[in-house]
Length: 254
Ligand code: BV8
Image 1 (cartoon, protein in one colour):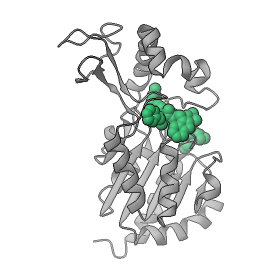
Image 2 (cartoon, protein in one colour; image 1 turned 60 degrees about the vertical axis):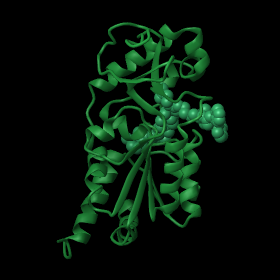
Image 3 (cartoon, protein in one colour; image 1 turned 120 degrees about the vertical axis):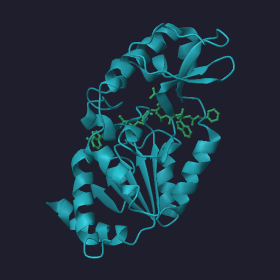
Image 4 (cartoon, protein in one colour; image 1 turned 45 degrees about the vertical axis):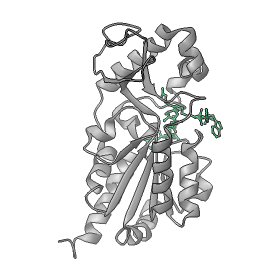
């Protein structure tokens, strides 16, 4: 399998690496049964992003936007992490510095046990008061009321996610760029690498001398710039890399 030819040189790098960063997108959750955004049955295919994941859409019709998020919460709520999530969670203890930077809002990395997770685009289980910015955790499926109102001040609640045209949390974004500059290896898993500013992180890592490892069944605009391109599903490729890494570490594994 041609991936085997890639594995040995990658393992050689990983056994000496100290700082690992992982950028994930919707593709890492695809094998958990969560539709991606731009795939054949992608979420956006049924809706135009402009209609639903923008501040304007929410202002025009908060109930319509909440219906869509409530539907997605229903899908995500019944899904479990897959082997790709679990491998990444297990690697957190294997490297001095290991961080996941995710574009996903499904919380599956945390459900798999990952602790060092930066959520660039927020989290679908968090609601934010449009009046005072108060955050609420809400796992109800379905939501008790649509649109949900703040129990403190009665204002409309919105999903605590970053919509198109909204800026990301500057602290989180700065941390993400810092991790990208400092990592020895950046895995880029399951992202079409088109959404900014997330898609700039791997290029920042590359400019800082990191080895870039892309895991994706398809090519992306990033593929030409990566050092290792595994064309496959992350639920299969990550366990494959993990197996080889354990074999490499076993002789000296304490
Ligand atoms: C901002 C949350 C500025 C909501 C999302 C240049 C610079 C700055 C901004 C822009 C720019 N150019 C354009 C922009 C605007 C825009 C943008 O990037 N547009 C794109 C479409 C061109 N960016 C923004 O609006 C951002 N804001 O920069 O604001 C600003 C500055 C100051 C003041 C005001 C404003 C905000 C972007 C965040 C938008 N929110 N989500 C929600 O989810 O409901 S984005 C949405 O797309 C999701 O978060 C998703 O994660 C993200 C990216 O998609 P992917 O994760 O990559 O998923 P996709 O389906 O596309 O791809 C899946 C991949 O997986 C595929 O490649 C597939 O092959 C692969 N795959 C499939 N199966 C598997 C697999 N891989 C592995 N294994 C498998 N089994």
